[in-house]
Image (cartoon, rainbow, N blue to C red; front, side, top):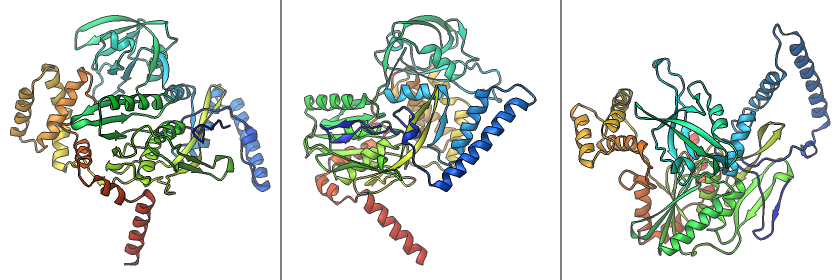
Length: 496
C-alpha cells in the first residue's frame, strides 16, 4: 500500500526507528509473497500440525488456559525464530505506544516519566513514578511539575503496584478530560494537581543560536511533526543571520522513513536521498531530491553523530555525507540499515523487516554504521576510574550533594569536586563536574546545548570555523568508499 507525492517525486514509505518501525497498514494477505510450490506445501503441513498442537494444549492442559495467552506466546516464538532483532510480535500495549511514538501526538498531560524496577538490595524503596522532565507548554509544565518530582497516586490509586503500561493508560486520554495526580516533592511535600488533558506533541527538535552566528539544530526523532518543526527552525535561523549550521543527530533512534526523506530534501538539491531493496519488487524504491533548497547551497553544515544515531538518522547523515553537503563529527553510528513494516492483527500486531536501505553511494550500513569524517570520542574510563565512580554513585554522593545544594554555585561545585579529588578519586575533574551538574539539572529544565562539557559539539564548531572547510568537505570519502577501504584493509590483513 503506497501513496504518491508528485510534488517531491517520492512515494510515502514505511517508517523505521532505531529498534522499532513506524507506519501501520492494513494487513492484506494478497500482498504477501508467493511461495514456491514445495514451500507452500510445507507451510500448509506445518500450519496444520501447529493448529492440532494449539487445540490439544487448549483442551488438555492441567489448568484452563486463556487462548490469548497461547496465541501471544506462539506469535512471540514465531518472530523470535527469525533471529532478527527488528522483527517481533507487538502486544496491544506495545501497538498503542508505537502509534503514539510514530504519530508524535497523543492526549495526555505532557510528562516524561520512568518507573524503577524492584531492587532486591533495596526492598524498602518506594516504587513511585519518577518525573524525568515536563514537556514545555503542556498541562504538566504549566502546573509547575518539576524534574525529580514523583507521582504517588493517579486519581487516588497508588502507583507503586502499577506497571508502566498501566500508568500510561491512566495518564493518557481524550483532550479535555481530567486526571488528578498526587505529587511528592522532596521527602515530605505532597500535594494534588488536577490537570486537564490536552493534545501533546512530542518534541522532535531543539533549536538555538551558538556564538559567532552558528545555528544549532538537534533532531530528536523523525515523526510527522519533524518536517514542519525543522522548517520553522530554519526560518528562525534566517532571522538570526546564521552563517553555518550544526545538525545534532546524536542518540536519535530514527523514526519515519517519509519524514527523514522530507527533511533531507531540504538540504539536498538533486540526486538520490536513499533507496530500498528487497526480494519483493514492490518494496524496491529510489527516493530522489527535489531541486529547491531550504538553505543556501553554500551553507557550511556539520552533523554530530554517535553510536546512538540509528536508522532514519543514519539515512540523513549518510545522504548529507555522500552528497558532500555536510561534515560528520563524532563517533561511528549504530548500524541499522533495514526497513520494517508494522501491521496490525486486531488489537495486537507485528513488525517485520521487509527491505534494506542504501545510501546515495549504494552502501548498506547494517551492522557497520557510518564513520564520522572527524572522530571525536568521549575519553574512556580506566578500570580504576570505573571502580571509583561506581563506588561514588552507589553511595549517592552526587545525588546527596544536589539535594543539599539545589542552587549550588560554580564555586560550591568546585569545592565539592576538589574534596572528591583530595579523597583519592582518580576520575577527571571534568567528569566529576559533569555528574554533579547532571544531578542538579534533575530539578530544572536541561539546557539545549552544553559548551562547557560537550567536546563533540565544540569540535564541530571548530571545524566549521576552519578556513579550508570547503576543501575538507570535498575531500571527505563517501560511505561506500569507506566500506571498500575497510574491506581492502581486511583482505590485506588476511593475506598476511
